[in-house]
Image 1 (tube, helix red, strand yellow):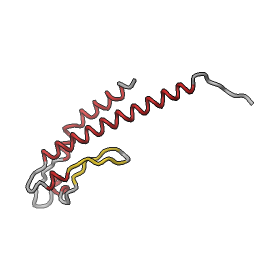
Image 2 (cartoon, helix red, strand yellow; image 1 turned 60 degrees about the horizontal axis):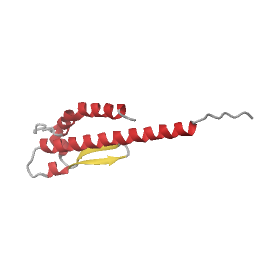
Image 3 (cartoon, helix red, strand yellow; image 1 turned 90 degrees about the horizontal axis):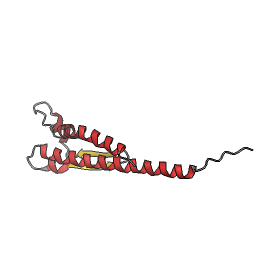
Image 4 (cartoon, rainbow, N blue to C red; image 1 turned 90 degrees about the vertical axis):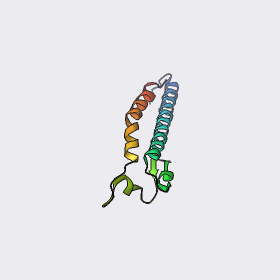
Length: 114
């Protein structure tokens, strides 16, 4: 039975695994920092009566990444508006404020892997 033996394969695989771990860590950091910045701005954009909506805005980490959540029961009605009440968006403007910088930071994180 013939066998192939590639010299240095173990070293190469270790290097590839290290690069993959570095990419994952850097992307996770960019995702977390961006989500936190969006949450901070969403809080500043949220209309305040009692402060409940503003205080309900936070970042949640799940298997897919980070999510900015406003879990006051009426958050969607404020963001999107309902009949008789005009929309007062706070999440989407915060997202728009950070999306281009997020994409730039992701590119930089990937391009600066060593």
